[in-house]
Every structure is written in structure tokens, then in C-alpha cells.
Length: 394
Image (cartoon, rainbow, N blue to C red):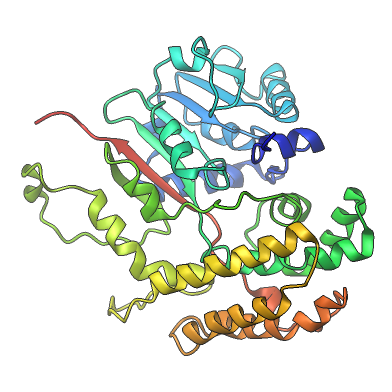
């Protein structure tokens, strides 16, 4: 039987690796408010709305979103550990039991009599649960169908091999970890946390523990075709209009009156421009030129090379073997050659070159290579995208 990404892994390990730092709850709310603002959604958008959140995990993000005063909030998850945590928040009153409801289920296999299918939703939130599915585009379209209202809002996350390149490199370190600890998942988690704690400390705004990151990105088996890019997500939903994203990469100079022509739309511009900026998702420290100047796009070639590299890493990860180390090194060399000298990508290029130099050490099962640049290199990982169901008004 094919393992369901996320759901079977989380359930078998009895984990919910998406805990958020709630030690300063007002700061947690500010983070979510900032995210929604970048997506074109103010707190007023949520007030009085009927919300469905798919894969709420611990319910920590729901705590913040619920402060915006929705009329109802349905939380759908198939992981027993997640259901337990969310139900505890409702039982304790942290989430209002009069307006919040938990439903157990897999959003990709909802039965016809599911309460989810009988409700109307103004806003559907699907964070971190569409990419990495066996068919991310089909998963996205399944989620979109649950936005039942005209002008209703969908918030999803996207990610691809470019924005995840730094983590794919780290994922290649898993066979060396296995060489040291064998098949003991507890020891694998402990050693991974030790190895990557110094890396993770370079993300000052990270809001979940390194152990959760390790479970999701180092020890979690990924599906072969897990990626869902920003442009792919936009293109997959022609009945929705682009609303906003993080990063906010679009600047639209069209006159608003031009939208009286029904042929004018919002999604086309957003989809087309993604290729010109996606190279900057390689490194969270890089941004496009401030003057808005254009340069030769490398997006398509970069995606191809990073995807091929990702497949090589997946093979090594699955086999717990460095038999393909020579191919991996050559592919890293191609990526390095493409980005070297590109303005804004110098730190990523340096880190990637350093990682390539460490491959012989890793092949010996040695995790002690003296990295200097690589631990500080992180891509932009996950992007957020908001869309609204297109109005049928002529």
C-alpha cells in the first residue's frame, strides 16, 4: 500500500512536528497578522467568516487566526496526535467550543457524507499540506473545491526544488546519520538535532523547534514529485484570481479601469513573473534588484537542474547509500556554475561550493566537515499564496 505523505508518517510516529513558539502570544499573533497582510488579507477579512483549516497540526496557528473573530472555524485533520492537541485546546477554552469544531479525515479522501462537504466556507486555509503529496496539483484542486463562496479565499503554501535546495543538500546528509545510528529513529532524531542545531540557529525568526524541522525535512520520506511552484499553483486554478503572496514579488502598473475588460485578469501577471524572481528563493538573504532592473532569467534551467539534483538525493536518501556521490557532485557543479557571479546569489554559491567539497567526507560517514558558509545558507523554503474564487459578475 502506498504511504500517504504526511498523514501515515505522522500517524505511525505519533508526532505533530509543527509546534509554534507561543511563549509570547502577542508576538505569535503579530506574525500571523503580518503574513495575512502580505497576502492581502486584513483581520476584518476573517471577522464573521466561515473558516476551514486543513491540517491544523497543533492548532497553534488557529489560536492566532481565531482572535480575528470568525463566525465558525472547522479544523480538519487525519492525524490522531493532531486531533488530540486541537481537541484539548477546545476543551480548555483556548479555542471557543461554541464556534470551533474538529473533524477527523483525510482531505484527499472525504466520504460523500462528510460534514466538510455539507458546509459553506468563505476562507479555506491549507498550510504545509499540499506540496509533498503524491500529486500536488490534484491535491490543490481538491482543496480549492472546498472554497464554496463566490469571492471566497484560499490560502495555500507552495514550494519547489529551488527554494528547497539548501534543505535538499542537508537531506543528503541522512545516509551518514544512518551509518552512525542504524535504524533507531530516536537516535537518528537526536543526532540530526545535534548536527543541525547550529544551522538552524542562523534563522533568528524561526518559530518552531529544530526537532520538528528535522522530522519534516531530514527523516520524513518525501514523495518523488513533491514540488508545487508558485506559478504551477496559480496556473492550476483558472477559476481563481491571484490575490497576494509571500514573498510579495509582483508590481502591477495596469490602470484599474482596464479591468472593465473581462479579458484582463490578475493571475496571468503573477504566474509569468515568477520565473524572473524564483532564483532569489535560493537564499532568504537575497532580493531582486531594488531598481527593478531586468536580467537574463535562469529560472527554467535552474528548476531543471535542482529537480535533477533532488531526484539524485532522493535515491541516496532511500537507499541510505552514497553510491551516486559522483553524480551528485557533478550536478552540484552544474548548479554552482549557473548561479556563480549572479548578483545577490554570491552567498548561496559559496555555500553550495563548500557543500560539494564536503561530499567525500560524507561518503565516509563523517559529519564533522568544518563548514563555514553552508550552515548559514537557507532558502526561502515555503511560499504562501492567496487566491479568491473568480466572480461570475459580468
